[in-house]
Image (cartoon, rainbow, N blue to C red):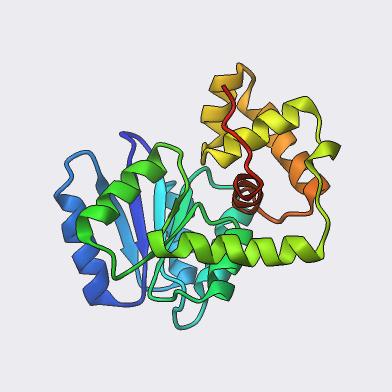
Length: 217
């Protein structure tokens, strides 16, 4: 994607799509490169356009949001994916995070807050709707209490990577901060997730913050 900050919208409600397109048009540094009404078309368009960010609806007719998200991740596209939905259900939230979402936002948020969240996402941070943070933390904490996890099994480098995840940083930013390659960060993230028994980096981040992990300095 040349020029950067290209956004693809996948949502089966035409009126909502148009509204988001008009909202994004108010930000000159952002550009909607495509909008589609279903997951199948969304995945195909994502492969063609290689957007920087995908705004993805959760409950769509046909191919649902989680299935679409998994297909995008399986295609190994280097883009951020944020779920934009009406669902504040804890199961939906956790399922999205485990499937590789970079954020989860509710459609009833203020328009200017959505633009702010888009900017934060494009800058490599994870975005979760304000009233959902506690919901996610509680769901992960309840599961963690049933399954023992211990960061002592991590290497010093993996702990540094985990601290980066706790700050909501993308691999590229973690690599820059630690002066290592992005590929190396990916390997460490994969290893620490396996050791801790998490499905996604955001789960690990929420868990580590819940345990009082301090940002690395």
